[in-house]
Image (cartoon, rainbow, N blue to C red; front, side):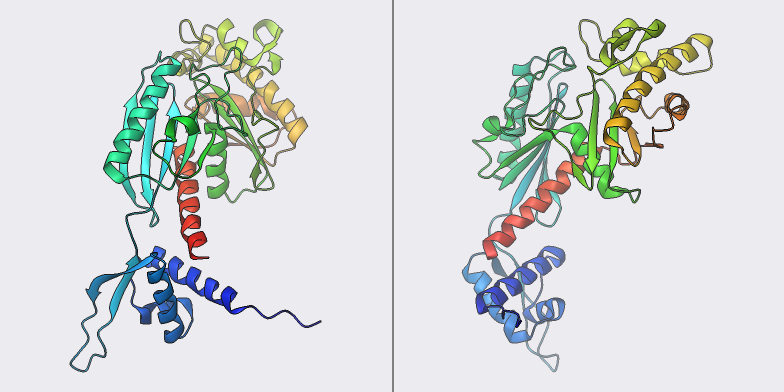
Length: 375
């Protein structure tokens, strides 16, 4: 059977995409340089540049090669056209909002932060997001899209945050797509911070593409990565481990989040864990610290046993401000080593993992919008 020949339009589109990718990588190039970089003839590269200039995607920078006096023709340098194409990478947490604007080259061209305070109400966090969006838009222009990390469960159909009973944080029913609609012309993608952190570990780790990511901080969270994909569940609530039943102090069967209340390790008036208090109580060589550490390890270890039984991960990455403490991590390893079904534990390796993954996703999607326009 004879394979179908590519149509002229398909060939032109493929060439135009290669030219755009080359300009994304190298910022400015002559037609001769583009021909070498993309592996096409100079006339073909020249025609592609002409099409992209007419489409408003590429422009003559006004800069010229030296040329003349035996050095060949003067060449024009071409760049990506129009106002800077940007995407926003945003982190939303109870204490405040951090947002960055990135361009197609991967440069950060704008940054804004707004504190909401440790006891912020949902309206305080919403106000912080609006303030950051306004300042970022004023400084770097309207973005093509935004990608958001949120420290709460996220409804995958709407991008709204879901306030579960006894939730750690008070972000509440925040609606990032609605709050950003006046500033972002394109899509707003939202997921919770633990899922983003797991994606960052997936991108950085050679240890396999099927694992679990356990976050131990003010909140408790888990992400399941299977064959390179984060499993989000029907509503986006997969990995909410706070209400799994485990072994609490005195051998009682309690939910995981209850353990921290029974041990006095929460922020006052909140179900959020106090990492500073926990580390002070559970680290060091004293008998009391060892006892507290063992109780925490047994409780978290029970959740890891359930996790391993249900999802069969290749390994478990442990992140979060107290999950990576050497004393606590060693206690977790000891507790889980008694169960042959729990795989090896690894400390998280990517700093600021959620924001790292959000920034990478925003850049990937931004570049795709450029290539889509060329098609």
